[in-house]
Length: 148
Image 1: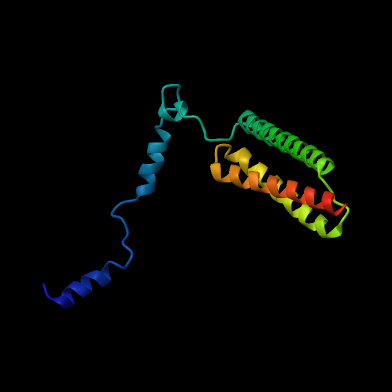
Image 2: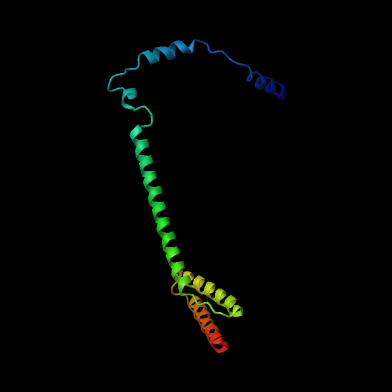
């Protein structure tokens, strides 16, 4: 077989071919003979339709999850607001405006270090930084007291 015959045969594959006999009559006869009794595979297999109760149960589950998540986040926000209010009330505010800026910075650093300590309570580096920050705050208070 040479290349030209091979190309001719591959082009012939593109043309539609009709079957030797009518296939639809056989398909229709096979469908008519299917047993629709209780033992037939068609009767045993349930139709794939969504069940209303399954959709409702999944909706209820998702609603409960979303509600519990919202309550949890709200409680956390309220706890953070209470902590912030308590921390703001206990903050030291010097009368000297030159020292006030430093006091605000040291308070912010102290709060951030305390939050980081909640995540890693055994971190020696965070403990050293918190100790230094508290030491600087006490030095600032002494400076204000000396300045009078």
